[in-house]
Amino acid sequence: MSGRSHLLSGFTPRILPLLAAFAGLIALAATDDKTDKQAGRDASNVSIEPRAKRPDLAPDVPRSDIKINTTLVLIPVTVTDPLNRFVTGLDRENFRVFEDKAEQQLSHFASDDAPLSVGMVFDTSGSMGNKLDKSRQAVSQFFKTANPQDEFFLVEFNDRPALAMDFTTRLEEIQNKLAFTQSKGRTALLDGVYMALHKMKKARNPRKALLIISDGGDNSSRYTETEIKKLVREADVQIYAIGIFESLSSRGRTAEELNGPGLLSEIAEQTGGRHFPVENLNELPDIAAKIGIELRNQYILGYTPTNQGRDGKYRRVQVKLVQPRGLPPLKAFWRLGYYAPAQ
Image 1 (cartoon, rainbow, N blue to C red):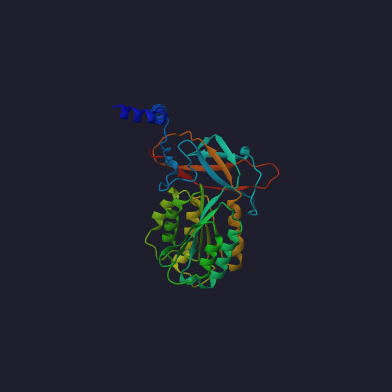
Image 2: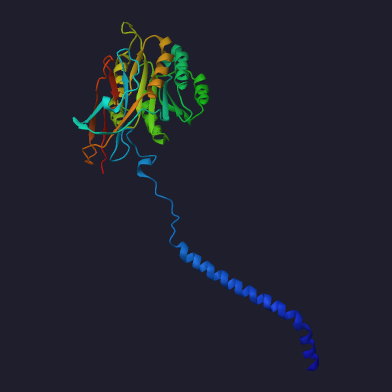
């Protein structure tokens, strides 16, 4: 016994510090565990769930570009003089807005150059052969009015439409694609418009427009005029069209070509855009540039409609100009209406 006691007493000076350090570690671990539990109780009051996506930004839900939410209606308006030149510098007091003949109180007025999402709808049918070069130049001139925040896509159509280029900010990609375009087949214009409107649902910018370049009426589409006109009224897109038509005296114009100008005009004007018929191919680039400038020189009028009914009905909009003194008679172009929310 005395030998074993002597052995233990020899190790005691070295064991005691180790035991003390081990005890300290146990105490520290207990303290940390207590702190973690307390922190867990405090964190229970903090939510890290992501915010719900705003319904009005859902990518697959069609919206009207004049319909921002259930309480604010926004209308882009273009104003021109008798020489078809754009008129800028007007004030809020120069505009009156009516919805279903009831005057509305303007709560928003702006003339900013906001970013655009634009779809190019390009005719590559057989009759476009000698017109392709000037049509490509028209696209190039239109692109010269673009801003860095703009995005573009390209739909080509002949017998059927095809998405030739998805949304891009690299304009040279679209121009390179058009450089190798060949003309063939018939003209599925309405199907091309349908595809472009469907693609536009994926646009990232609130302001959206289509530019159609075509040389005739439709003769190959699955969708009817009635279906497309209804879709255009529901869409959130301004439509501009350049129609390259033979003169009325030409004997070679088909029934579809004779109907082409009226079809493009009706589609464009419903949206607040315009149709520019062209007989001289040399005018194409200048007209395309003019359309681009027009999109940059629009007034945005906003109001909260007095009719707050959520009936899903189409509401007609009218814009009247209060003529400024010293200016010739002015003309306004605007979207003709929108659909109220259904629920």
